[in-house]
Image (cartoon, rainbow, N blue to C red; front, side):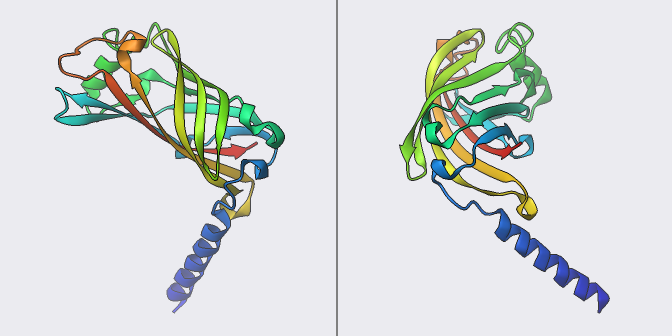
Length: 201
């Protein structure tokens, strides 16, 4: 009887917590001003590359991301977001191959220890838009455009703090950044998919 009551109470608490944590608005003007940092536990960056002409898209993940920005609702379109990925954190599910990808033949992470994106402008409405910026990868900086969905702003767990979330994609050619090794086995076109959440400090 006691166990059943405790289970019911826990379920009720989880239900209330979930309701409190739902995004409340997709309007960037309703995001509170302040400094935001990436919630690293709720951030992912996947890279898909065609294998041998397109039999499949080999998928990799960066396990270590970081990022932040200062936000002002009146000037949200010029918010400067900085995101970094640690190239040594590449995860293919094959540990030996991870070392090869991070090594001098591909990412050359000893020489280029960070992959960095710095935004220059944002555009959009109704939760959909683009974020333009400069991507520095393998020692080369190129402009890129991200297709982004603003998933919304709302309270954090137990109603504490402010949390915002985004989903997005972009498309790159690795040869534009000087990564051309093993081109007979891996395609030039990369699809990037990301899911990120930021919390207000």
